[in-house]
Length: 340
Image (cartoon, rainbow, N blue to C red):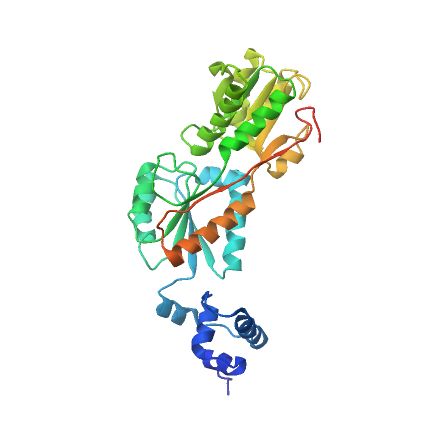
């Protein structure tokens, strides 16, 4: 005869609390004394109790699932290690909060138009994180019209009354450019990110700000727009080389790898002839030749914090909108000829 599965009432009896208290612990309710919470969790661990997720979902109107939406950038998502790190941070935080993560990847406009209205109806997920690097207005409007709480991963280009998490990209671009100027470089160029994105716009503004504060002219010829890819960085650097910059702030490490290749091909040396600063501090930055000075953004923390903010919105509502901005850090390696 099979043994009867444990029920909430059994856990409550063993812990000396009411079934309602056990339920509150299982649902991570804030108003449970820590001593009682730990006692209940200890009993759950000792007994191997598994809650009935279907029943809990019916009772709480929650699915226990968070969605990560990648609109129309799937090719970039699979090739860019930045996205892999963000997803890792999101997944770790979902696990820590007993949530399942679902990825929603869209290849075409038709995919977005068909699927986003379904995704943003209640019952499929409890909330969604929307990667907004290349977010189109139409997609954002569909998300905003939905019933599901959401958070943008990246500041929207338009000034909208929505919740988002971002990195201080203006400060990052500023730090990178100031570092090059402090090393005595005179013709500092930049390979910007796509100027359809807030990251591209803000990092370029940091570059401009550093020049303006020192009374230096901003030479528009020394600004070339890239696309955050290695090949984009390569072709942008090829355009800059005839202008003879002695330093370049490159708005992503991926583009910096391409820029380094373009410099080598014309027989110039980094950092002797051209100093380079990247952005992101991806693992590749440590293995380029020479190792890449870069702006570190806390990518894993960005993903984890996005989950924390979204869960707060789910519990407490989206008004007022949450605006979380994480800091950056200059990591000095050999590509500028300076170490600390």
